[in-house]
Length: 71
Ligand SMILES: [Zn+2]
Image (cartoon, rainbow, N blue to C red; front, side):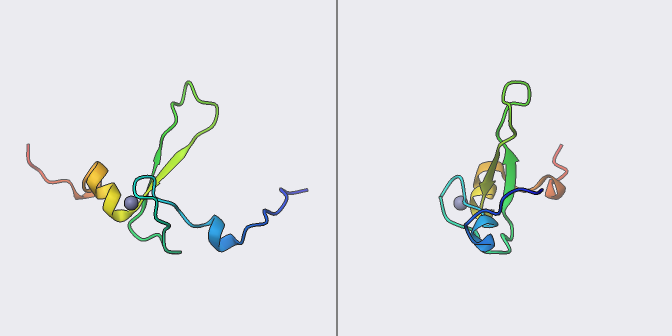
């Protein structure tokens, strides 16, 4: 029982790669964000895109928890 163990070291498997600039995350992946990129009713499997702290800010701005009351 159980899934076969992958051959790559866990450290590599757990590492994220920025979708935008292509750099790998640190083990902590501090500030990184994952976004779903699949279309729920069209794609069979959910896919995630990782963005580093810099690129997620550039692409998506500040997090929703930090939004300002500008309206
Ligand atoms: Zn990046």
